[in-house]
Image 1 (cartoon, one colour):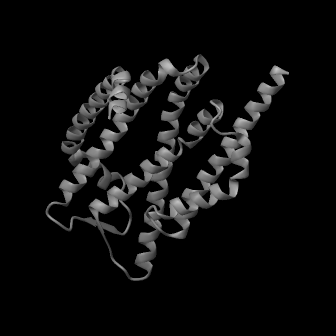
Image 2 (cartoon, helix red, strand yellow):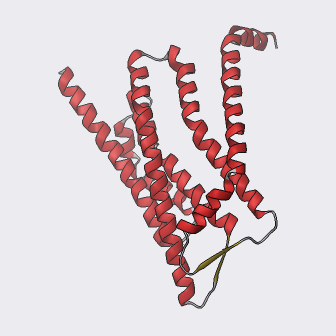
Image 3 (cartoon, rainbow, N blue to C red):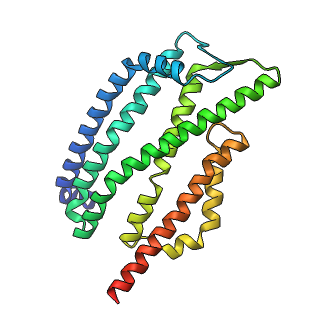
Length: 244
């Protein structure tokens, strides 16, 4: 215990700064969550009007289902809004311990990370919309009427799109790890098959579970993995030529 107290006293300043930043992020998160909770009604109207799937009737199956959906919407919105603040505070907290080139790399990746997130989100949203339309049409041809639960329908689309948005950040994370020497391009090349298997297993756990959606969502992730290797290997070769 004396050793633990000594350790805490030594890093008390850092713990206090970390506590202060986390508390600020929590306040922002709950503030946006409350806003998103009460702003769900226009979002649902927009979704039902402009993202309606043919041959599908979206219904509420319980009295409190819209409340659950409002909570999901608030959580999603607050997560999206808090992410840039989290990245900024993470950088501000780690900045004193980073080398100048690492600080420059970290800052340069932030705008690209936002672009990749929205590209991944848009791709996931479009894939889910296409897949649900195909499934609805197949059900109709089989004589099945499509009465879809509004909470699960909207939540699954938004959740899958959000996860793909985060997955599209993968090249930046790997690039940063390569630049700071934690991993290497050679290691990524040697784990190609393992990465592909992990990607397909992960995507198979996401909705929807049909084979077409699995291919549509897993293929760009495998491509992103290969592009990450290609880009970083070319950058590494160029730097080697310059230094030589």
